[in-house]
Length: 264
Image (tube, rainbow, N blue to C red; front, side, top):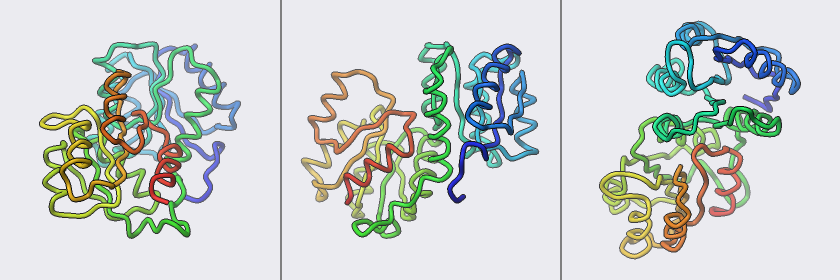
């Protein structure tokens, strides 16, 4: 997709409140987005997704027939909709609802009510996800980069691999946790490792410590993409030797900028 603009986006909005649907639609129209389908239920939205192509799904958390969490999980299990960007707009703060959405690979989590600039930033994040631009430069040839993605969430790995693949990176391996990654690193050399923090068997901090102290690839750049919010734990990861950290959900353009800094 070449140089996509906001006015070219096709958006499916799922919101049970007619007032909220009108408010969000008006805000999207203000950014030039006119191709918007609106629904009150997740079931109707899923049926439409199976028939028509959309660039972005925006949903509330609590729908009439399911939660936004269930909606995005349903999307990720269907090959036809698994790669459609998803944005949540909700006042929900419960970790049980939000963490599965973060792990599903989403564009943005916006509060309700949100600031207009937050919506604008999320829309541009969608554009960068769909068309992130290649890493190709005098210093970097993305097609020769060998990258390992480590995350215990299958959907998170798929999301990260999609973003990296759109940047021109073709050689992508994956591991479900740090322990599995250790075995892969022993057998193969990599140019970059992208890892989550919270994983079973061996978490991201332990993986970084192993790489820096015990592996034969001690200087390899390591990018952590995580929903971890504990400052003390994040500080410990930085002390362990992480190259860069970004939030989950992340902005593709932020990842692209970090990769240039680490790899160029």
